[in-house]
Image 1 (cartoon, one colour):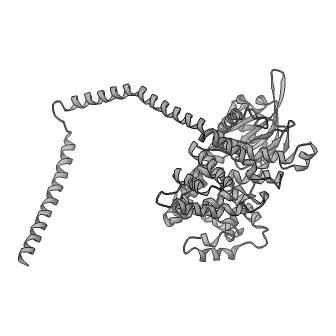
Image 2 (tube, one colour):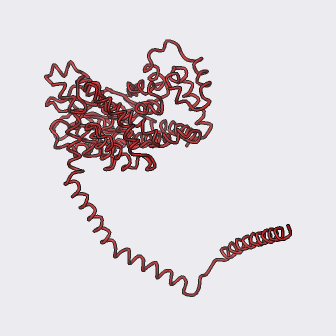
Image 3 (spheres, helix red, strand yellow):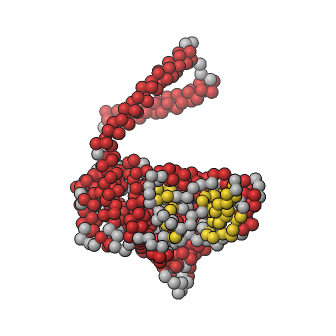
Length: 521
């Protein structure tokens, strides 16, 4: 962490900017800490008037505060339980756009990473075409073995690591204070939220890790006919520079161009939704920043995802939880949906499954009385997490990115097809996963995995026995002529014994006094 004074000054500045831009007025009053209401009323006095919509105010404040706050804002867009539903809705539209840094600085970074001038690394390097809080992207060309190829060159923003480290220290300070001051802060696990943000940003700031994510996602999806990611140029990739193939495609938010090229928009909406669910459930590894600027459609009609700086991972338990939750709502099996929460350990066992099933029914039943295009899976998960707070379910950091991505993916899919039936689209992917993992084939694999674990333990048994024999021999040698204690140890034991005797003597006198009082009374 930074110094308390430095963190306090940074947080005070952030508070002033939020108040000035009118962001504090967007917070839900019901969620304010005890005694904080008067301070928030005073903040309204310095609020800048006529600053535009709520979303514009939030965007202006976060952009003024810098890249760390833009990332934090994007992260909190899926946490209405923390910032309130009104502010969370404003944050959903926040885009990570920052002014580009100079071409010369980018070329210096490239030269530093590859120990040779940028002009030798690339045949050409154009000006930045997109700039975000972590890095910016240039279009370049390579020339290898007589072949010229167009590439995308991503260069890390200068001094970005120091800025994030400083701001994250202030975020941690605020989170620790919030958890100490409020039981609600502890339930929301504010420190865990900052932990998740810190891990995500740390991985984004090493572009070799993004290259590895692209490679892993490509390997996972090599059999898919409607989804792919750009190939990595490993020879021109380092910690601060990432080079990939250039994607000639149409951005997913350019609907007119997509129609003019003959693409079927409802089909693309289905591909977006099913790709995300398939990667999350089947692989436990998914692109967690699937906004339209990162999604293209190539000439063959395939969805191409770029910018894998933010990736999500789910373990088998979390994947089962997600699949059974979605399937439970699809099939209206409220009790099974409740049981999954208890089996995953998300809801403490002292609560009633029947009561929890009743709470889930209150969320699910209204869904089935609405048209398909009125149902939001992302909103469903948000409501579900709100209800679970009544049953002491703590925030699950591993589900935060999943929830965030589902909000974005659903929005993209609905833009392509406003009448998209999310449940009908999700059902085959969810059903396939459940049949594969929870059906007979999955049970056989579980048994095989258990047998493999037993086999590994048996293989390790001789080494464990040998280790035990070595420890026994060492103990025997150490105690053969009695235990030899160092003079310091003997002195410490004497002091402890003296204290023990002193307290024992006092205790005996107290007992004797009580006995005398009882006899003489």
